[in-house]
Image 1 (cartoon, rainbow, N blue to C red):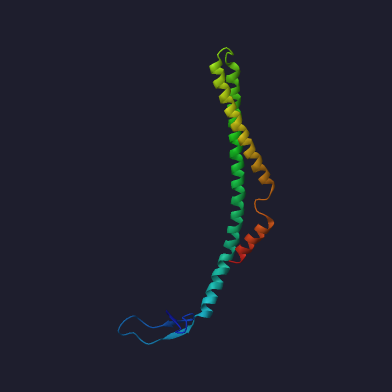
Image 2 (image 1 turned 180 degrees about the horizontal axis):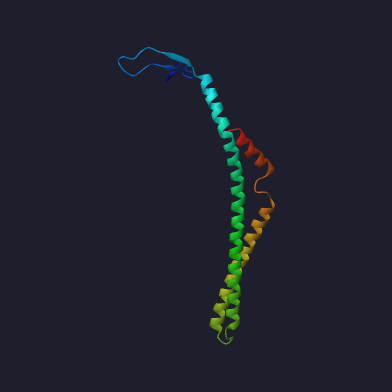
Length: 152
C-alpha cells in the first residue's frame, strides 16, 4: 500500500495498491480514502494509551511527594550530624585550659562555625516543613493532570 496525496494542497490522502515496483508493475488494484482509516487508527491508539497517561500522571504526583520526603529525611540526617559536631566542638572548648588563649580562641571559632551551620540547616528544615503543610500539588493541578492523562 502506498499513500497518494491530492494535488490541491496535498492535505488529503488515499491508500493505493500499485503492485510491485518494477517494469512489470500492474495498475492500481485497490484504493480507498485515508481520512476514515487514519481517524480510526488514531482513536484506537488513544484508547490504548489513555490508561498509560493516567498512570503516568499518578506516578508524577507520587514522585514529587517522594522527592519531598527524601529531601526532608536528608535534612534531618544533616541536622543530627551538625548537632553531634557542635556538641563535640563544645566539649573540646570546655576541656581546654583557659590559660591557653590561642587554642581556646581557635576552638571557640570552630564551635561557632558548627553552631552557624546547625542554625542554617534548621532554617532550611523549617522552610521544607512549612512547604510540607501545603499539598505537593494543588487540587486544580491534580485535576488538570488527570484530565491530561485521560485526554492525550
